[in-house]
Amino acid sequence: MSKAFIYDLTPLELTEALNALEQPGFRTKQLLQGLYNKLYQDFDAFDAIPKSLREALDNQFNITPLKLHSTVYSKNKDTEKVLFETHDGHLIETVLMRFERRNTLCISTQVGCPMACVFCATGQQGFARNLSMSEILGQFIHFQRELRQKNEALRNVVFMGMGEPFLNYENVSNSLYALSDPERLGVGARHITVSTVGVIPRIAQFAKDHPQVNLAISLHAPDDALRTKLLPANKQFPLDNLMKACRDYVKETNRKITFEYALIDQLNDTTEHAHAFAKQLKGILSIVNLITLNPSKDYPYPGSSSMRVQNFRNVLVSHGVRVTVRLRRGIEINAGCGQLAGSIKSNDII
Ligand code: SAH
Image (tube, rainbow, N blue to C red; front, side):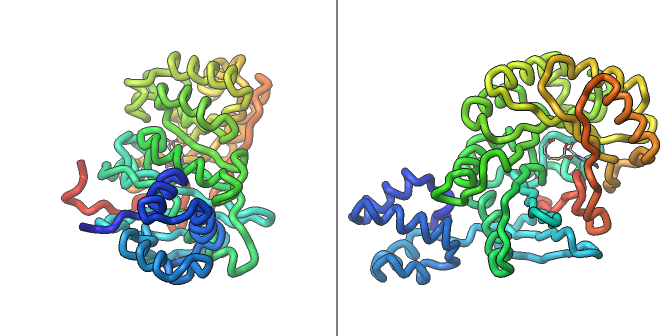
């Protein structure tokens, strides 16, 4: 039988595993420290733990959830994309963006994505399976180790890589607990953002489970007809219902929501679209994040010109909407929003 991945276990499950090995209670803390603070790469390194236990753990658990496949850097080195190989041979991608005063990691949650958004390279690729908690955390741990060697640290995480986080809720949720727990990975909850296409039932649950983690909604169109064309999931989760879920979210958490909107030349970036979008946002504590559409293999339309982006922004601002324009980076290494494709073993696409 293949070994279980130790980062798939919650602290409670680790305690149970240690109980089964007849270990005293304080071992859980020692094990958590080695796994989440020291980021040891093998059980041999856990020097606070007796050798016999290290061997027992090694027999029972695998500590390496992902294999490093390759690393690509953007020309100016401010963006680093890593391909990881999963135990069953898929390739997933993770992107580190280095800014002057912070590093942000963009994490994947699925192998491929079933949402099929037409302009997204991941959506065009199809779907194989959810990533486990160990595979989600493994992406973070790889980069945290690497940055520590340079006396730096990861303090910002966005769940905006491959996949739809709210279709893999349990593993994403447990990963959020591990990331934000000061005893484990110690990233402040307010420095973590989860982006969803709008899986409505999960929005309320997320508000209850993770009220301090930021929520981003991929909107991209202000009416159902256009949104369904771009994001087929809109058929199942239409705009009126989605915006109601957003209002409820704000009521419950008192937190603002980020609305992402990728601007596509002439298609969703007219003045009328901007007015309609501002109307949708009425009464919702929010900020809009505009992105110029990035090129992806199977989508022929170009992103909007900077003039059209400015115009769209100005219309929103005239309605009192807060707007930021996302800097594009890593485009030449296909590390931009919607460009992550990795590779699914072809016979595993479902
Ligand atoms: N499935 C989640 C998270 C992944 S994508 C979601 O839909 O939110 C992260 C963001 O990149 C989303 O807003 C997505 O719509 C956007 N995106 C996808 N393809 C893009 C492209 N070609 N150019 C710009 N943004 C894109």
